[in-house]
Image 1 (tube, rainbow, N blue to C red):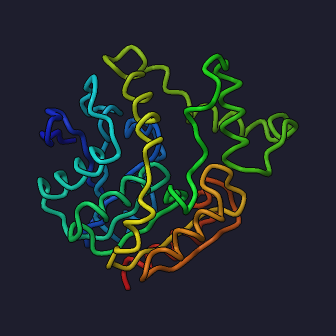
Image 2 (image 1 turned 60 degrees about the vertical axis):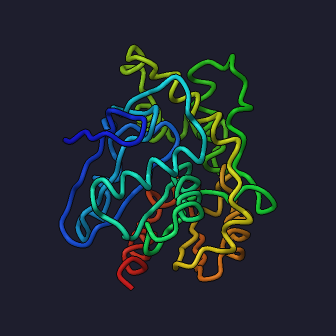
Length: 267
């Protein structure tokens, strides 16, 4: 799969899968395209050519010592769209990727033809996503996994990890990226993404977004709450609101979400 140079990043890794109209997918916290499932495995690839990438500091993309801001992530995405020649196209932003997509919409009008903001928050007066940077630094790997799993879905209790052991083990395996920890600046890049996330606030700018936007979330999400999703949809002039039975990963728990997204991108 290809590498290109984007702004100050000499190695910017991306993948393109599927055939049809172009769709850009911007992924979430700690995303690494070497881990599956990822957007190249989604139902979108049956209808579109899906383009997705490892963001700065993540996966196989360059991991500089500094330069991690929400503005930088959005500027990276804008430069990437130009470099691969896919814009303006529909775009999906998932979780942290939704924050990046909001900044892209505000800072670079015209790069995206319509946008889907999934399990994300606008910041500012509209409400921020859970402050992951405030999780205690001395948590063990298992303690952090359990804390994140509970935040992702309010229906998860302590007993759930034993009652649904197979599901818990699958999630635990997906979350484990320890095989990459020895790579240069791997942990640094992941940490700096969390730090950049603190500065996300697109609340005022969203009022000026002039493309159709779908705002979607899970009813049991404690990271990007339904209230923040409702607020975000109310702030964007041409938006639709979708709330599903599910948590932060509602689109895996509820296949209807992808059906609705495909219809939205095609409309």
